[in-house]
Image (cartoon, rainbow, N blue to C red; front, side):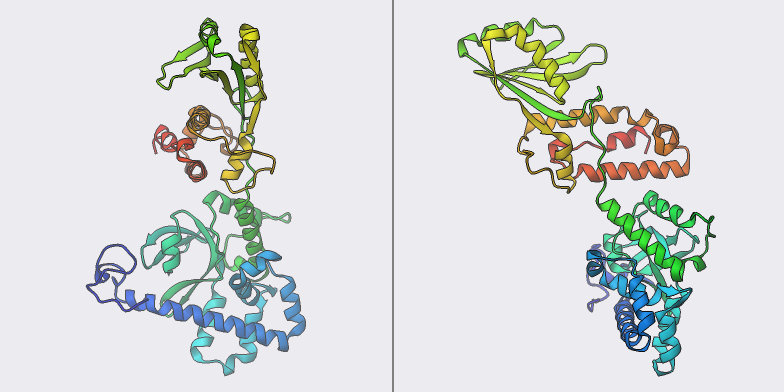
Length: 442
């Protein structure tokens, strides 16, 4: 933490004076200045433990490395986590490398080093919900296993964390301060963390007790492994197949029919005589029509008559065939059908979410018309969502589930997921999740 005068702007960026913000409290500034030294002390001791174990307890050290909860390519990415976990979490029974190191080298250590290791081994690997964020200082967290609440000094988490997110790590309390160590860098939503915990606490041989003592030694090692696997799965979600109201897989289809310019007026009149075709006002020099299903007012496709070409657009292969089947027989020899253009909406969504689309998929078609089509599709899909029975809610609708705390949390998590996913789309294709929130009274 840089030296900041009491009356200078707080470096956390709040806009307040330092004395009114992060210096608040009897030891606010001192606590922020002390935490980097604690983390440096922890790293030094973890390195010392590994070096000692490699030479003094080679067999046990080799076994410990084989129990690494984070393996493969990920191990290099999470070096700090794995180094701490192997020293203080992984062990034979409840005896870790840190216990053995302390027993063997304790007399040679400085008093504050012994005290730190004692506090570290007293802590447990917990799943901590961020309940409050203190800008520029830290967070308040609650262990979802024991219910214990801690005020943690962690400027990084205060800046990047989100309320209600769950982090996996150890909260070590030392000389009146609580700090995170051995913290996995990725957080999960409450429902995802609940799934990890449920799987962990309900093994085949029966349920385990909810207690901090559970989350030490071998059990903690397995929990960290489960957490990491869940984070990997959350970062690579399987997207559901997208369908329209008829159950067709979403696929943008565009048919282009060319014609001679003198035949344009005759073509427009022929189309306007078709049942269920609605002509839209337009000032772009083209004639726009939509095919609307009378019973539910669903837009099945659109027709655009340009200067010398007719363009048919739908959101599925089946609807494309049906629209072409209505138009082509009426126009007959007046038009010449070109090659159909297809765009798999699923692949486009996957690309927006970070998953590469197949190499042979052309993602170029974008613009106001495609944006409007995709947004209309999502609006139609989400319009009935608040009153649709959902398996994750035990068959209840989101509107019904809002009255039960656990279901409400699942609903809020789902809305956050939807809002996050929408940010990957161009602005013209983004659905306003606020519509769903308002419909549910949130």
